[in-house]
Amino acid sequence: MYAIIKTGGKQYRVEKDMVLFVGKLTTDEGQKFETSEVLFLKAGENDYKTGAPFVAGAKVTGTVLAHGKAPKVITFKKKRRKGFQKKQGHRQDYTKIQITDIQG
Image 1 (tube, rainbow, N blue to C red):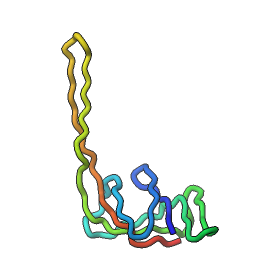
Image 2: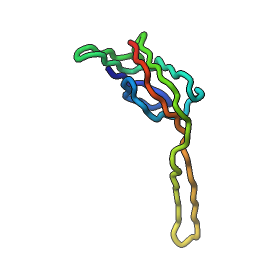
Image 3: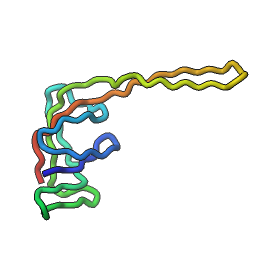
């Protein structure tokens, strides 16, 4: 059984007991995470539900394991012969979650 959920403007294919990294959530560490934004749900070989846009009555629950920051990504811009150089770094916040149950 798997589901495709939407969180943080992105879509993720999730299964039970799966650990994944998503965009930062406001839920504290150790707390439950629930979403009803299930786009697709497959329970068996020929048993699947497609949402329009979401599957009615479907819910995915999980536990927030940790919050953190991804490794730094450096961007560097330069214009030749002009002396222009610009260096900028960015670290994206993320939340590590474990899927505990898929209902639908």
